[in-house]
Length: 117
Length: 114
Image (cartoon, rainbow over all chains, first blue to last red):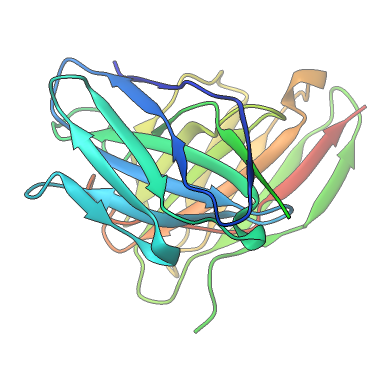
């Protein structure tokens, strides 16, 4: 079984400041890693994903994340945020093995990012 | 192209009733997954279907059931509704349902159980 922990439930930040949203996971097998964003009254939109290869992954809207296998972390970063980045962000994992968990995403609790002017 | 669509947008039911939620995947996608998102929490996996067969099931009671039709659309059914079933129900589609495939989410159906 896997679990995902997002270490901050809320992150307030001023516009144009850098931000880091933290995500740690626990799994007995190798995983794929994802970050999704959810704007109010909308579904989830994929920001970026790590499948293999380079541990630094670049996504949409200027976001990037770094996979750290030894620390089982996948933190999301943006060097300069905008008001429009205000949303809830979810870290998710899916395992790379077979079984009944085929295609299942396990999500963290979410981090609400609020960007202030 | 149209994204994942879900109907209805909102729904209010009373305890003990039955509800059916519907989802249409992106054209060409053959896999549909259902998630429950309780307020303040991340989505929880309920089911995944691929080519009309159940491929995965989360830790939900048998009151929850689903099916996928030949056109790849899907229904989620919940019987004997409880107050705790109040949530946003999200449908996601992907090309083949593989673990590395991107899942595209619909806007969700907000279910309120009174």
